[in-house]
Image 1: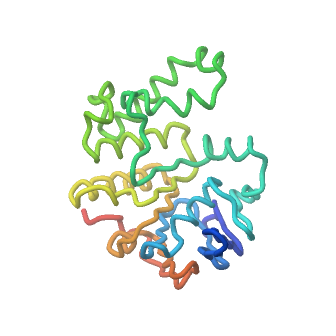
Image 2: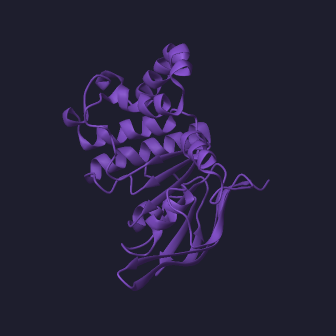
Amino acid sequence: MTQPTVLSARGIYKSYHKDKIEVPVLRGVDVDMTAGLVTALVGRSGSGKSTLMHLLATLDRPDAGEVHFCGERIDNATRSRRDAYRNHDIGIIFQFYHLLPELSALENVLAPTMISRSVWNYFTHRKEVRLRAEAMLDRVGLLHRAKHKPCEMSGGEMQRTAIARALMTDPKLLLADEPTGNLDTETGQEILKLLAQLNQDDNLTIVMITHDDSIAAGADICHRMQDGMLESAANFNFERPLVAA
């Protein structure tokens, strides 16, 4: 049985301007993200992969083309709909974590939920929201660090906190931009194992940006980006894990 497409891009073009010079970054990208699979977008720095992820997340808009989520065009939706898409439908993790330094791990996991709800709604449901945040920290193995601030945590712990934050809204899809790029090899492998476990246990759809061919090779589907275009696509064994057991 063919799995449905969760996220797709069609005819995506994007350029940036430096003074009067136009710098093309994406040149007509077509790509589909299949439900329940891990899709890797691999390429060297400057190939356009991170720009594509920002467009898929509606953090930026394409110059031309369309982005669809579960059949709904999302790139040209209203601001409130795009905010809801990022706050509820998808989770995003970044290479540099983007944790608020003055908040504890638990507070960082809670922050997006607090922001996305009205004061009354959060106050009414604060107990269940806190319990979920604690459950997400426990799932990534960090409940014992709930009261620690980012400056008191290792890189791997900060990335685990960022993953817990991304899972708070039970997203349909997780976008991961170089999730191991700022970590040592051993810690990076631990993060990959965690992502693989989330994919296997929850059937969570994951789109991962990476420059590392060895990481991309462990994905279910791998798309290589070169000069702003999808150079090739390779299908891998769907049973193959992100990392070796």
